[in-house]
View 1: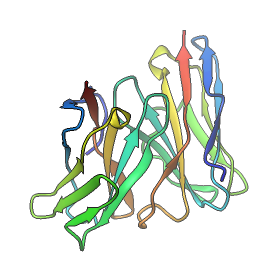
View 2 (view 1 turned 180 degrees about the horizontal axis):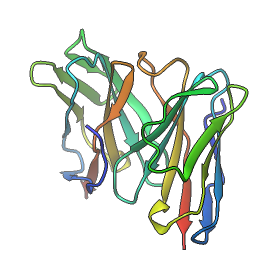
View 3 (view 1 turned 135 degrees about the horizontal axis):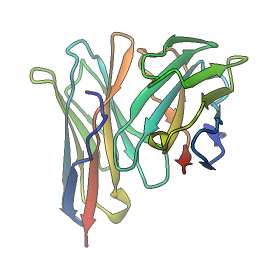
View 4 (view 1 turned 90 degrees about the vertical axis):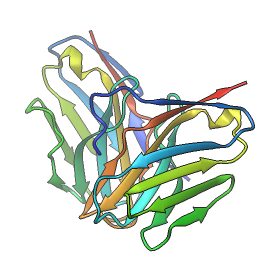
Amino acid sequence: GAGVSQSPSNKVTEKGKDVELRCDPISGHTALYWYRQSLGQGLEFLIYFQGNSAPDKSGLPSDRFSAERTGGSVSTLTIQRTQQEDSAVYLCASSRNQQGSEEKLFFGSGTQLSVL
Amino acid sequence: GESVGLHLPTLSVQEGDNSIINCAYSNSASDYFIWYKQESGKGPQFIIDIRSNMDKRQGQRVTVLLNKTVKHLSLQIAATQPGDSAVYFCAETGDDKIIFGKGTRLHILP
């Protein structure tokens, strides 16, 4: 069956430009998560959606980062005025029920963002 | 705990040997734990889970052990194969939060 889909798979941009990263979760999954992974490092939590609302935005590193989710499905992570330190893999995951329940996360393959 | 700012530790294991990957979790209220495997260029994938009312659970070639007294979780992989080469993350769920461990890179020696 269809898994979590992320696009683009790779994005190269110039410093100062805005980028949008897209995540299509598994159909019917109410919870959606964004993580950032720098080269050779672990998972850094960014934001969690339950439906269309974001009860936990605590991981967004600055006000240049924002995310939205519409129709309880697709989510977009936007980074404004990109900086070189934003270069990383951005991973999206979804789960059937809310965070904290006994649910496994299903991850997409990520978007590799390179800021030149 | 949070996995930010540190390079991943590496475990090197001879092909055919057993691998043991350890994880110290942070929240004594966590009641559900998962191990994920992340291969190069892919997102993490579920391997095995365990609830806090258990101390051991077995899957196919993998076993997870939970010691709540010392807040320790381990993943044992039997007869390690080249395809097991990946980064392994533990995750704990409790208090409505999911926390990923720092990750361990498993390197298979021929």
